[in-house]
Length: 343
Ligand SMILES: [Zn+2]
Image (cartoon, rainbow, N blue to C red; front, side):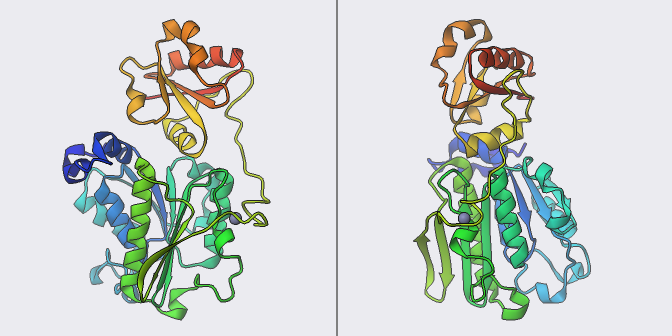
């Protein structure tokens, strides 16, 4: 866990506070593409106190990258970007957990990987990869921060993939013949634009994780005039988010409660209308989850009726033992429940 006191200048912001900082410290972001946009993004993710950062990039550092990929220097040329980035981040924050994936995203088993992270950040410069990530994140209900830049233009969008959320394909249809989602090695790029886009993504992720404001559904455009925002909405004809069927893992069995990891519980709570029933002795889950019902297992029989029946229920306790029993009881009462342990 990151040391909260190191972020005191951030903690004293009323909208952040100690609880907000704890949420940041217990969160994780998978960054796909450690280039011009990914560089400032990972710096600010680390600086805000994120607990875990994943880096996906198969590429090596080239001398042509240095003008915009600000975490690399001349001595890094020829080395794997993910390794250099990990060293750079851990030199600033030794306690930061950095996981590297020196592969193309298409080579990774995403189905298993996505559930381990709270947010995915797309910082790639490849059209196919962007639409692949958009589709995969939509299907998994995984929040996606998108960033792209070329010449003097930059774009940043956050998709929370709730029911009403648009997707990348709603905004820029694929294949985008004249759209701004090209390859900067062909079109060229001004370095400060990637800096702004990566920073905007960091801001959206920060606000999303602590719930300061709704960040989804707004396109941020960086151009010669500065930065402006354009609201946009789901396209009912979209071939991705309106026509593909989202996977709904069968976590909520009708018979016996399924065990999930705490990271998965956080992910479910952010994406859907789920509530947490906290059976831990000191109501620990209240610090990490918004909709929480602290209870004692001894009084569950009397108190369970106050738990809303139209929501998915995630039951937790320190070791998972009490949570398992309680989840089983709730299922017998017609609830959709699964359980997890806090430690
Ligand atoms: Zn869409």
